[in-house]
Image (cartoon, rainbow, N blue to C red):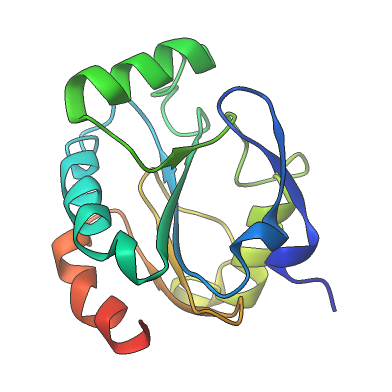
Length: 159
C-alpha cells in the first residue's frame, strides 16, 4: 500500500522532496490560496507552527488554483505574498491540483485515506487540512471553516 512517505513533491523552489523526509513527524498538510476569504488562516497556521515546531511538527502548504482561481500567482509571487503578509516560515510547495484526474499523488492518498463528509474524496475548498501522525497515517481532516486554533487540541493529542 502506498503511503504519503512513498511520494515525491516539489517545493516552492521546484526542488524535488521525497516525503519520506517527514517520517516520524506530525504533519498538517493544507491546500492554500492567496486570494481566498480563508487566507488569513496563514496567521493561525504560523502561530501553530511556532508553538509546536520543536515537537517534530511540520506544516506543509500546497498552493492550489482549483477553487475560484484564488491562487493565480507564480511560485515566486506566492512565496513573497506569504512571507511579506504572514511571515510564513513553514514549508511551501509547488502549486498543485487537489481534485480530479490531475490531482497530485499526495492529495490522492490523503483524500482516499480520509474522505470528507458523506464519503466524498474531493477537497471542497481552499484551506482543507489533513492531520498526519508520526507513522504517516491520516488521523483527521478539517474543512476550510475549521481554524488552526480549533485544530490545536487534536494536534496536542498526537504529538
